[in-house]
Length: 358
Image (tube, rainbow, N blue to C red; front, top):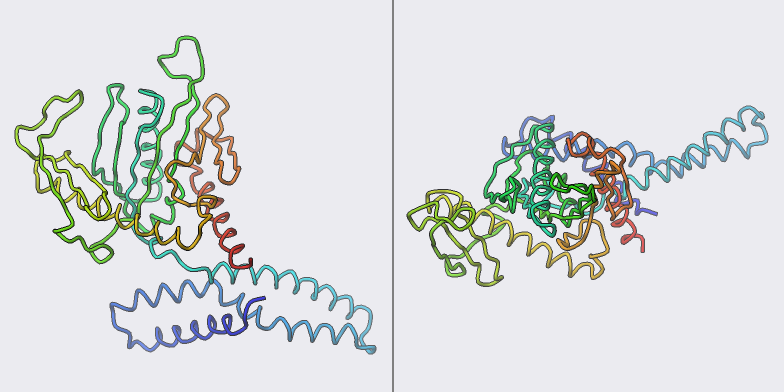
């Protein structure tokens, strides 16, 4: 059972924000922030009021049921309403608990997505390319902006690695469950015997860190410059424009060579480095909070096999929630991506609720 004080605080806060917004005296910078909080509370305040009035409402109905002067029709109606009330009480309690769960401050951030070909040779690089195209299509449908930071192509026209920044509303919350190993089962174009091959690609999704999130001290950085090279090792630049940045305290290393300008490569490299350090610090905190985090949805474990794309059977399976969608083609086109995200998000919320209740 939820503490009544906590539930009442939601109602009081909603009332205060409503008063503040109607006063017209709010600073313009704070207006958007307060409006968002008010909008969020709007979604739960009705349930909070119903939850608090539950005891009084049930008492009133029980009085009717136990009143000898009440006719049978009235008692039947009261019994029916009491059953509805009990069901709504459980639903409202669950919704309020979910609302009160600690918010991930990174959820509203942009995201940096890193896709790398894994086991499976050239076929793995083609699958890495297919995954990136899928995220591109999802971005287009949602009107997100996607910017390639770094790209390394394979001889087969696939991708050895690609790093991109995706910008929009609540990007990280939509993509954070994509981190892990994605496995594909299909017949490659080069396969003459029609045999199904298995290959994989890894995906890492990091919240974009801003200067305020991570302060980089020059003395903690070692910056090396070198000559850019293309596929096969051939030189693509006659100057030392490529940059390798090492964050000495964490040992995190970022290399960037896509731009002809050393300054631009350094800027891009620092953007990736800042986000990787931010993600590293977040994971350290999360591991301290929950020693069994690896068993949880969204653990961020890059080595965990999270999903299988089986082309001969036309299905995609997420192993963390045992969900199989027999709509692989639509999934790769970004059509039903939200269905997967919603199920993953719900499972993660349920796990958080279990921790609170245990």
